[in-house]
Length: 168
Image 1 (tube, rainbow, N blue to C red):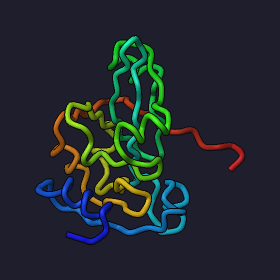
Image 2: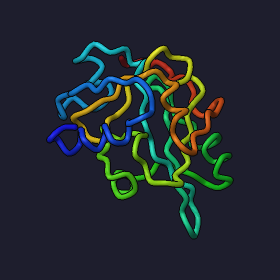
Image 3: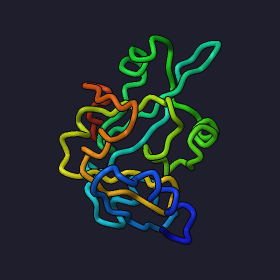
């Protein structure tokens, strides 16, 4: 274990889940595009954990894992899973639910009972780069590590390939 509390929490959440590598990063470069550009990772290998909320008198939440090259389909796929109007959770909701800052949200160590939905395209990658629970750490692992998490469901069509930005 480490004297870095964020790393120690991440290592505890990863214990027994299979092979992985921890990758330290500059917190100012934790956002996906900056991270991939600076450290030379393919954005198609970067998998983001996004918290969503099903609206209603009692909101319900889920964590979705999608490739950075894809866009989460909140209006159809997420809404269909929740069976109600859905949206992205706010940064404050995400922080309150996970304890993680945007740019460092990880699927490892989430609260018990929180559904985890993984877009099927994530499982096709040889390796994925995931948030590490803080803006200072990333996790590099085969996507099969996600199947070790309780409540995981692989969902076909949870996200769709992003259209190229014509201004880019």
